Length: 546
Image (cartoon, rainbow, N blue to C red; front, side):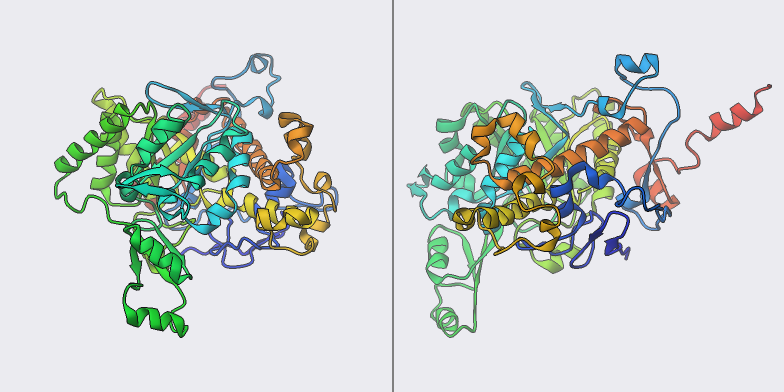
């Protein structure tokens, strides 16, 4: 098993818990006082791209070729001359990395434009998503990137009204959408995910009546964290009863008297709510195809022009099926989520041992998409998910999936700004503490060393103020400002890596921009080994007479 360093002295970052490849801790807490790389990025923005204490230090990387197959075993290639899709300044030798254009778009008939190739993955019925939603949604809207409202939001909303199997009112869904649309400026999109329960509750019909032209619908097959559907945990017997009456599986069964007695005596402290498993009544891929295409057509009949699909870390048959059906149905996006991250509640043993790891899943996705493309078929635009949190891994994901990958989907990484900003807002604006779910009573040293006002603490404060105006700034969630800092750092880092590869637009990135660091990675990904790339040209240069 590959292990990752717990701290990085050059950047001045430390993980509270076990570090994973993305730079996050294996367990991310909303009240954390710092200071992993993502947490610190929310405050410092692009400053964190560079070693600390400039002028009094030097820094060096281990720079090894790690064993095993993962995004860590891919290496980004740089070039010393040439440029692809370069700005006019390149012709005069005046090109700068800041001229790299990160704008992307995706879609079949209707193109959705995004300011950067990032999106926030599905944040659904989990309580932590609900608590920090306003900050996360506002941040994504201001940054011009999509955000996905995950499954079961309507079903777990105690205020929603469902009559005769059809939802007629859902204050929580409306809050989720309006939090994003309030700051939406034309770039990005709010995506609403539907699972089995959502389909049964008529969520699509409900949205069609109110938000048809403003949202994209996402069908869900699975995710990288688990293969048994959505889950949450509740510690309230009354709420457990409510969820069971809504038709969910509640485990242990709160209807059993012995379970209720065990809860009252505190032998049982909580209940897990589970969703139904999808497609269990279908045995062949042809049956799945028929059912899926009918479902997509029913959504189009409701007036939805933009539809996407999210699939998880299943095996190769499911991956090929997802790519084929999403392409055949002319969907706008297919998100492919590798094992084993999770923004909600998932069985830990399942997260550690189930499913296909991201780089293997994404490499096969490219292979299967290429087979369709070579047969003359239009391939659905792809988004890759699974442990992305750094500019380098984002570049690698886009290159590994080129030209089909248009976005990188992040879950946990884009939630941290919401946590951090809300904690700071709760201290600086005590009246807002409960509203924003702030966890701190005072600023920890990791924050106060930057300053004691929002203008001092957040590197992106004035950028956000310029974008939305001074009046809007008075009520913008601090978590949204933290999101700006995080996205700014990721964007600048991605621009630098692209400039190094001499690629000035995202569409110019290709698989030759990354290399395999070991032979196992070469075999599994189809990428060339690092010293084989350009080797023939190199030898021709040396053999040329001079």
